[in-house]
Length: 332
Image (cartoon, rainbow, N blue to C red; front, side):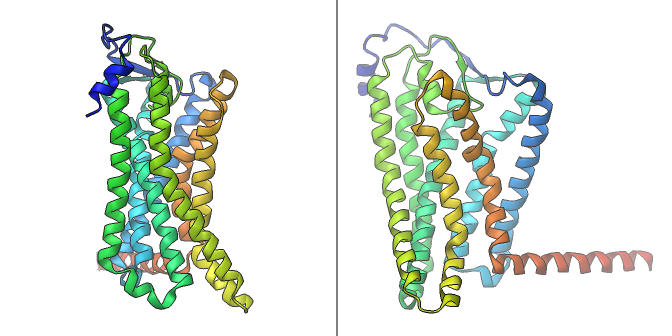
């Protein structure tokens, strides 16, 4: 479908075959003295990310009082965050430990595809979660009818379909480029624009197409999120009692924090000019949205959500009681 278009993009380079078999992720090569520290820091972040997000998924599955649309979306969101961080952190940890920064040509594109697709799905799911909070606060009487189980599944399915479709288009375009060398990617994972910079094809039109596709697929969910929270804040300000306003805001404050962190860091990364001076700063902000955000999200939702904390305390108490019973029976 896109091959004829790419032939046009590569019209000056159709004779040039892709002779690169692997890429080198420069990562944090300029911080040689901090490689061990970075390894243990990234390992700790990855372990907290996995533990926190998997714990939320398990609580949502096991606790019946968490079988609501809001927690259904939260469980899916935590599942995405687990996979999202797992697309880049294992490779980054191996590189920091062994010093081997190489990644095969095919694996680089696979990494970019799943990382970018899951990031796009996250954008859509954040907008779905904001719409859920909008209905709960602004239209509470119709909430149960509108947010049926079937509709929730459709929203999550649509988020996955839209996210993976958007990146399928861009990865098809990028994978048809010719790469003749050099092969060093100035990043710690395979991101789209550092990849494009290594191509020996004419990529001017491709960059415009990628920005256009990104705009078409990401601006609508972002605008839906903004509109939903605009309506939510307006509705909360109309509540007469301060306790009512506080209760209403507490139901969406955690999600608002996550939205701010995610969109704030990702906007900085892709809006900063691509200059030599700002590339290292770009890499630092990439760590925020690609590495730290998946770790922060479960902490924000668990520490600021009374129902999640209550379910967590219940399971910790049950685990403690079971350990005591096991110890007593072992002595008998």
